[in-house]
Figure 1 (cartoon, rainbow, N blue to C red):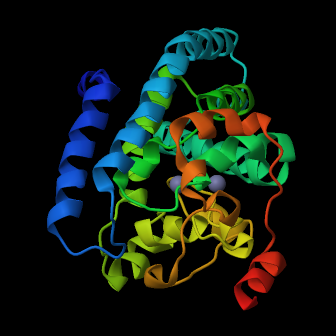
Figure 2 (cartoon, rainbow, N blue to C red; figure 1 turned 180 degrees about the vertical axis):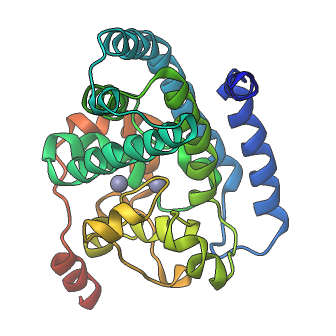
Length: 276
Ligand SMILES: [Zn+2]
Ligand SMILES: [Zn+2]
Protein backbone atom coordinates (compact mmCIF):
# COMPACT_ATOMS: atom_id res chain seq x y z
CA UNK A 1 0.00 0.00 0.00
CA UNK A 2 2.87 2.39 0.82
CA UNK A 3 4.46 1.70 -2.60
CA UNK A 4 1.13 2.46 -4.29
CA UNK A 5 0.75 5.64 -2.24
CA UNK A 6 4.30 6.73 -3.24
CA UNK A 7 3.47 6.09 -6.93
CA UNK A 8 0.26 8.10 -6.69
CA UNK A 9 2.09 10.99 -5.01
CA UNK A 10 3.93 11.74 -8.30
CA UNK A 11 2.73 15.16 -9.52
CA UNK A 12 0.28 14.52 -12.38
CA UNK A 13 1.73 17.54 -14.25
CA UNK A 14 5.06 15.66 -14.63
CA UNK A 15 3.18 12.64 -15.99
CA UNK A 16 1.24 14.85 -18.44
CA UNK A 17 4.39 16.63 -19.71
CA UNK A 18 6.33 13.33 -19.97
CA UNK A 19 3.57 11.57 -21.91
CA UNK A 20 3.07 14.53 -24.24
CA UNK A 21 6.81 14.66 -25.10
CA UNK A 22 6.99 10.88 -25.74
CA UNK A 23 3.75 10.57 -27.73
CA UNK A 24 4.15 13.82 -29.69
CA UNK A 25 7.63 12.68 -30.81
CA UNK A 26 6.37 9.19 -31.74
CA UNK A 27 3.57 10.75 -33.81
CA UNK A 28 6.19 12.81 -35.67
CA UNK A 29 8.41 9.82 -36.45
CA UNK A 30 6.10 6.83 -36.96
CA UNK A 31 3.36 6.12 -39.51
CA UNK A 32 0.15 7.90 -38.64
CA UNK A 33 -3.46 7.57 -39.84
CA UNK A 34 -4.09 11.35 -39.98
CA UNK A 35 -1.75 13.74 -41.85
CA UNK A 36 -1.26 17.23 -40.41
CA UNK A 37 -0.42 20.54 -42.06
CA UNK A 38 0.06 22.90 -39.06
CA UNK A 39 1.04 20.62 -36.21
CA UNK A 40 3.03 23.11 -34.05
CA UNK A 41 0.14 25.64 -34.19
CA UNK A 42 -2.31 22.90 -33.25
CA UNK A 43 -0.10 21.96 -30.27
CA UNK A 44 0.21 25.54 -29.03
CA UNK A 45 -3.54 26.08 -29.35
CA UNK A 46 -4.26 22.94 -27.31
CA UNK A 47 -1.62 23.81 -24.67
CA UNK A 48 -3.56 27.05 -24.00
CA UNK A 49 -6.55 24.88 -23.06
CA UNK A 50 -4.38 22.85 -20.70
CA UNK A 51 -3.16 26.04 -18.98
CA UNK A 52 -6.78 27.23 -18.59
CA UNK A 53 -7.73 23.80 -17.20
CA UNK A 54 -4.76 23.88 -14.78
CA UNK A 55 -5.98 27.21 -13.33
CA UNK A 56 -9.61 25.99 -13.04
CA UNK A 57 -8.47 22.71 -11.48
CA UNK A 58 -6.27 24.52 -8.96
CA UNK A 59 -9.41 25.92 -7.33
CA UNK A 60 -11.79 23.03 -8.00
CA UNK A 61 -9.45 20.28 -6.70
CA UNK A 62 -9.49 21.81 -3.18
CA UNK A 63 -13.31 21.65 -3.13
CA UNK A 64 -13.26 18.13 -4.62
CA UNK A 65 -10.81 16.75 -2.00
CA UNK A 66 -12.81 18.43 0.80
CA UNK A 67 -16.07 16.81 -0.41
CA UNK A 68 -14.53 13.33 -0.86
CA UNK A 69 -12.94 13.43 2.60
CA UNK A 70 -16.19 14.62 4.21
CA UNK A 71 -18.15 11.81 2.49
CA UNK A 72 -15.51 9.25 3.60
CA UNK A 73 -15.47 10.52 7.20
CA UNK A 74 -19.25 10.10 7.34
CA UNK A 75 -19.09 6.59 5.76
CA UNK A 76 -21.41 7.57 2.92
CA UNK A 77 -21.61 5.21 -0.08
CA UNK A 78 -22.38 1.55 -0.83
CA UNK A 79 -18.82 0.19 -0.50
CA UNK A 80 -18.89 1.06 3.23
CA UNK A 81 -21.59 -1.62 3.65
CA UNK A 82 -19.51 -4.54 2.29
CA UNK A 83 -16.24 -6.20 3.34
CA UNK A 84 -13.91 -6.59 0.36
CA UNK A 85 -10.18 -7.37 -0.01
CA UNK A 86 -7.99 -4.26 -0.44
CA UNK A 87 -7.21 -4.86 -4.16
CA UNK A 88 -10.81 -5.78 -5.02
CA UNK A 89 -12.02 -2.53 -3.47
CA UNK A 90 -9.45 -0.59 -5.54
CA UNK A 91 -10.34 -2.23 -8.87
CA UNK A 92 -14.11 -2.03 -8.30
CA UNK A 93 -13.68 1.59 -7.16
CA UNK A 94 -11.78 2.57 -10.34
CA UNK A 95 -14.47 0.85 -12.47
CA UNK A 96 -17.24 2.71 -10.59
CA UNK A 97 -15.51 6.09 -11.12
CA UNK A 98 -15.31 5.19 -14.82
CA UNK A 99 -18.99 4.17 -14.95
CA UNK A 100 -20.11 7.44 -13.33
CA UNK A 101 -17.96 9.37 -15.80
CA UNK A 102 -19.58 7.35 -18.63
CA UNK A 103 -23.06 8.55 -17.59
CA UNK A 104 -21.94 12.17 -17.12
CA UNK A 105 -20.25 12.06 -20.54
CA UNK A 106 -23.39 10.58 -22.13
CA UNK A 107 -25.48 13.34 -20.46
CA UNK A 108 -23.06 15.96 -21.81
CA UNK A 109 -24.03 14.78 -25.32
CA UNK A 110 -27.78 14.74 -24.55
CA UNK A 111 -28.34 17.88 -22.44
CA UNK A 112 -27.96 21.02 -24.62
CA UNK A 113 -26.51 23.17 -21.80
CA UNK A 114 -23.76 20.60 -21.09
CA UNK A 115 -23.13 20.06 -24.82
CA UNK A 116 -22.28 23.79 -25.12
CA UNK A 117 -19.23 23.07 -22.91
CA UNK A 118 -18.41 19.57 -24.13
CA UNK A 119 -18.49 20.43 -27.86
CA UNK A 120 -15.16 22.25 -27.35
CA UNK A 121 -13.48 18.83 -26.92
CA UNK A 122 -15.21 17.58 -30.09
CA UNK A 123 -14.42 20.71 -32.12
CA UNK A 124 -10.88 19.58 -33.04
CA UNK A 125 -10.87 18.85 -36.78
CA UNK A 126 -7.42 17.25 -36.47
CA UNK A 127 -6.26 14.59 -34.05
CA UNK A 128 -3.14 13.92 -32.05
CA UNK A 129 -2.19 13.34 -28.41
CA UNK A 130 -2.63 17.07 -27.60
CA UNK A 131 -6.35 16.78 -28.44
CA UNK A 132 -6.65 15.36 -24.91
CA UNK A 133 -6.08 18.94 -23.69
CA UNK A 134 -8.86 20.39 -25.87
CA UNK A 135 -11.71 21.07 -23.49
CA UNK A 136 -13.42 24.09 -21.95
CA UNK A 137 -12.11 24.80 -18.40
CA UNK A 138 -15.71 25.15 -17.11
CA UNK A 139 -16.23 21.49 -18.02
CA UNK A 140 -14.46 20.68 -14.76
CA UNK A 141 -17.79 21.54 -13.13
CA UNK A 142 -19.33 18.58 -14.98
CA UNK A 143 -16.62 15.90 -14.79
CA UNK A 144 -15.13 17.11 -11.47
CA UNK A 145 -18.56 16.81 -9.86
CA UNK A 146 -18.95 13.35 -11.45
CA UNK A 147 -16.16 12.12 -9.14
CA UNK A 148 -17.86 13.63 -6.07
CA UNK A 149 -21.21 12.03 -7.04
CA UNK A 150 -19.42 8.69 -7.58
CA UNK A 151 -17.99 8.85 -4.04
CA UNK A 152 -21.39 9.88 -2.60
CA UNK A 153 -23.01 6.85 -4.26
CA UNK A 154 -20.32 4.21 -3.89
CA UNK A 155 -17.97 5.44 -1.13
CA UNK A 156 -14.50 5.21 -2.76
CA UNK A 157 -11.57 6.66 -0.78
CA UNK A 158 -8.87 9.15 -1.80
CA UNK A 159 -6.38 6.35 -2.60
CA UNK A 160 -8.83 4.87 -5.15
CA UNK A 161 -9.47 8.34 -6.59
CA UNK A 162 -5.71 8.85 -6.98
CA UNK A 163 -5.37 5.46 -8.71
CA UNK A 164 -8.31 6.28 -11.01
CA UNK A 165 -6.62 9.52 -12.14
CA UNK A 166 -3.27 7.72 -12.48
CA UNK A 167 -4.88 5.23 -14.92
CA UNK A 168 -7.17 7.77 -16.62
CA UNK A 169 -4.40 10.17 -17.77
CA UNK A 170 -2.35 7.70 -19.92
CA UNK A 171 -5.59 6.21 -21.29
CA UNK A 172 -6.88 9.63 -22.33
CA UNK A 173 -3.57 10.50 -24.00
CA UNK A 174 -3.31 7.21 -25.90
CA UNK A 175 -6.95 7.38 -27.03
CA UNK A 176 -6.24 10.61 -28.94
CA UNK A 177 -2.79 9.73 -30.19
CA UNK A 178 -2.28 9.84 -33.97
CA UNK A 179 -0.61 6.44 -34.35
CA UNK A 180 -1.60 3.28 -36.19
CA UNK A 181 -2.67 0.52 -33.83
CA UNK A 182 -2.88 -3.07 -35.12
CA UNK A 183 -6.27 -4.81 -35.33
CA UNK A 184 -5.34 -7.33 -32.61
CA UNK A 185 -5.34 -4.49 -30.03
CA UNK A 186 -9.07 -3.97 -30.60
CA UNK A 187 -9.77 -7.71 -30.72
CA UNK A 188 -8.04 -8.51 -27.40
CA UNK A 189 -7.60 -5.49 -25.11
CA UNK A 190 -10.66 -3.93 -26.78
CA UNK A 191 -12.93 -6.51 -25.17
CA UNK A 192 -12.40 -4.76 -21.83
CA UNK A 193 -10.59 -1.46 -22.40
CA UNK A 194 -11.20 1.64 -24.53
CA UNK A 195 -8.63 1.46 -27.36
CA UNK A 196 -7.44 4.48 -29.40
CA UNK A 197 -9.41 3.23 -32.42
CA UNK A 198 -12.62 3.04 -30.37
CA UNK A 199 -12.28 6.56 -28.93
CA UNK A 200 -11.57 8.03 -32.37
CA UNK A 201 -15.03 6.83 -33.48
CA UNK A 202 -16.35 9.16 -30.74
CA UNK A 203 -14.63 12.08 -32.56
CA UNK A 204 -16.27 11.37 -35.95
CA UNK A 205 -18.32 14.36 -37.23
CA UNK A 206 -21.40 12.24 -37.91
CA UNK A 207 -23.60 12.43 -34.79
CA UNK A 208 -24.49 8.75 -35.24
CA UNK A 209 -20.89 8.00 -34.20
CA UNK A 210 -20.21 11.06 -31.99
CA UNK A 211 -22.93 9.78 -29.64
CA UNK A 212 -21.14 6.46 -29.05
CA UNK A 213 -18.09 5.04 -27.20
CA UNK A 214 -18.45 7.36 -24.17
CA UNK A 215 -16.24 5.41 -21.74
CA UNK A 216 -12.74 6.54 -20.75
CA UNK A 217 -11.11 3.33 -19.43
CA UNK A 218 -13.50 0.35 -19.65
CA UNK A 219 -15.29 -0.08 -22.99
CA UNK A 220 -17.62 -2.62 -21.37
CA UNK A 221 -19.80 0.26 -20.14
CA UNK A 222 -20.58 1.09 -23.78
CA UNK A 223 -21.06 -2.58 -24.65
CA UNK A 224 -23.35 -3.02 -21.62
CA UNK A 225 -25.41 0.16 -22.09
CA UNK A 226 -25.73 -0.20 -25.90
CA UNK A 227 -23.58 2.71 -27.12
CA UNK A 228 -20.62 0.79 -28.61
CA UNK A 229 -19.92 1.49 -32.31
CA UNK A 230 -17.07 0.79 -34.75
CA UNK A 231 -15.74 2.60 -37.81
CA UNK A 232 -12.33 2.15 -39.52
CA UNK A 233 -9.99 4.93 -38.32
CA UNK A 234 -8.89 5.88 -41.84
CA UNK A 235 -12.53 6.68 -42.77
CA UNK A 236 -13.11 9.01 -39.80
CA UNK A 237 -13.62 12.72 -40.41
CA UNK A 238 -12.78 14.44 -37.13
CA UNK A 239 -14.53 17.34 -35.42
CA UNK A 240 -17.98 18.87 -35.79
CA UNK A 241 -19.19 20.23 -39.10
CA UNK A 242 -20.42 23.43 -37.35
CA UNK A 243 -16.75 24.10 -36.33
CA UNK A 244 -15.14 23.31 -39.72
CA UNK A 245 -14.24 26.96 -40.38
CA UNK A 246 -10.57 27.72 -39.39
CA UNK A 247 -11.72 30.84 -37.44
CA UNK A 248 -13.79 28.57 -35.18
CA UNK A 249 -10.69 26.61 -34.18
CA UNK A 250 -9.02 29.50 -32.33
CA UNK A 251 -8.56 29.40 -28.56
CA UNK A 252 -10.51 32.63 -28.02
CA UNK A 253 -13.49 31.58 -30.14
CA UNK A 254 -13.67 28.20 -28.42
CA UNK A 255 -13.49 29.81 -24.97
CA UNK A 256 -16.48 31.99 -25.94
CA UNK A 257 -18.40 29.29 -27.80
CA UNK A 258 -20.40 27.92 -24.80
CA UNK A 259 -22.11 31.34 -24.72
CA UNK A 260 -22.84 31.43 -28.47
CA UNK A 261 -25.92 29.80 -30.03
CA UNK A 262 -24.64 27.20 -32.50
CA UNK A 263 -27.08 24.63 -33.89
CA UNK A 264 -25.80 21.08 -33.78
CA UNK A 265 -25.73 19.41 -37.20
CA UNK A 266 -27.60 16.09 -37.16
CA UNK A 267 -26.56 12.97 -39.12
CA UNK A 268 -29.35 13.59 -41.68
CA UNK A 269 -28.32 17.24 -42.20
CA UNK A 270 -24.65 16.22 -42.56
CA UNK A 271 -25.48 13.60 -45.21
CA UNK A 272 -27.69 16.14 -47.03
CA UNK A 273 -24.81 18.67 -46.94
CA UNK A 274 -22.41 16.12 -48.44
CA UNK A 275 -24.82 15.41 -51.31
CA UNK A 276 -25.13 19.11 -52.22
ZN1 LIG B 1 -17.86 13.36 -25.99
ZN1 LIG C 1 -11.75 12.61 -26.86
